[in-house]
Image (cartoon, rainbow, N blue to C red; front, top):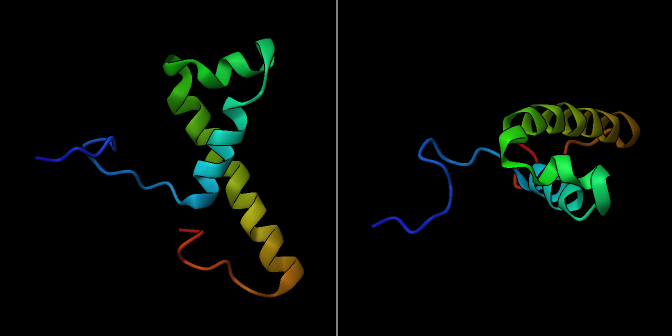
Length: 73
């Protein structure tokens, strides 16, 4: 029996994606409501993927190093 809370297709989010999701859920008031709404989860995930891709590219551009595979997919 699989007790994991991951979706059937598997959770393909890396640590950076999960950290952004967690930070967004802590935004108070109406601004944070859209991140807590389960109906907009897919839309938020697509937006977050673009944000984290940008963050990775900027990290690599500035440091000249790639993020570890454990942190970034």
